[in-house]
Amino acid sequence: MAELDTSGGGKHKDGKVRTKKKAVRVDLTAMVDLAFLLITFFILTTTLNKPKAQELIMPDKDDITKDQLPVPETRTMTLLLGDNDKLEWFVGSPGKSKPTVIGYGKNDLRKTLVDQDNAIKASHGGQPMIVIVKPSAQSTYKNVVTVMDELNIVDIEQRAIVDITPVELDLLKRDGLFK
Amino acid sequence: MPRVKVARKSTAIDMTAMCDVAFLLLTFFILSAKPKTSDPIKAEIPAAAVSSTIPQTDFSTLLIAQGKVFFNVEDPDVRKKTLEIMAAKYKMSFSAEEANQFSGVESFGVPIAQLHGYLAMQPRDRDKLPQPGIPVDTTNNNELYDWVHSARLANKYVRNKELKIGIKGDSQEQYPTVQKVIATLQKQKVDRFNLITALKSK
Image (cartoon, rainbow over all chains, first blue to last red; front, side, top):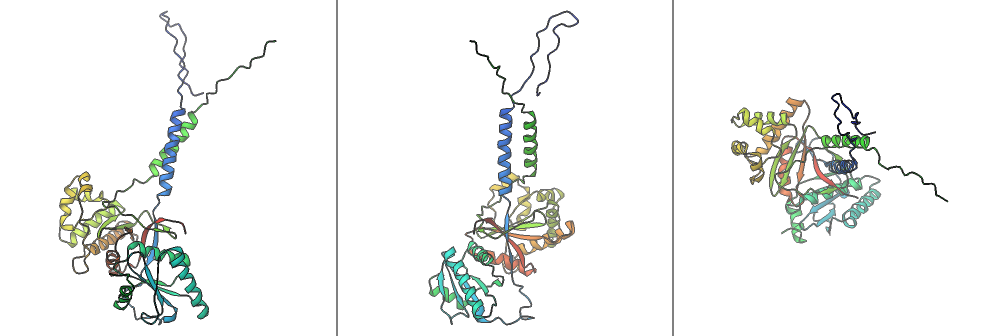
């Protein structure tokens, strides 16, 4: 057992009678309690705090005209990110089709992406939709991450973050998403 | 009729083995736990549902918050080498003491001209110092470009591996600041990077 046997004989050589030492026994319950509490703490903090990352691949800035196929406008969906956590989208080229203003929620952005993807696949013989994300100067970093995340969830592989053009900025201004 | 009394045994359990195991595990977890690095500026990272783990080594983090950019490389040796390459680029010289200090600096955001003063400070005082961030102008004064470039060279030199770059941005950060950083990275043909995110459910 967990005790050190320190009980010795009563009599010593010199004949003196010494007091008999008691067996030492320490109650470890509190110590074990504390140790497990700390273990729990460290387990929780280490595994839950693992930093995660979303991989982002930007289109290469050079060689933009080389070896590239023209992209059909009808398959392209553009997302313009405005202020106050709102965005607007259209399919095709700016000005020709009317943009729709939506939010970033599950029922807004994700539903739109799924619907448009299905519609484009149906009308283009199964070819996937291409999404171009154009964040304006008044959109936040969170908006960009949210959009890319939704694209990951909906599994749209052909997407890119591109700088916004003045024409599209005017669209945002008209709809009150850019001041 | 006298009842037969069952002698009660004491219920003391030997805790020694349990205590040993508990402390062994505790030691393991304490040692494996990475000390939490304190960022010089608070950034609330955005959440994403789809994410992958980020590497612990060969990694550099660019912290973006309040329009400022902070720079950090994980490995202390790479940090030292980075400073050496930067010093050569900017025709400055750092003493061995300053280089040692720099290898212990996690995330910093001062222009290189102020680095001497920054390294001379006590580590405690550094946290209190309001740092202006690393200059990322699109014109000729882009120190972040040189820092990232030097760090990539240093990582290749010290560890013979490509440096991966992560962006840790504040949720409410306006996009132009992020855009400037991404443009800086793309200028040196880094088209692939990690946006550090928190977890959320779909």
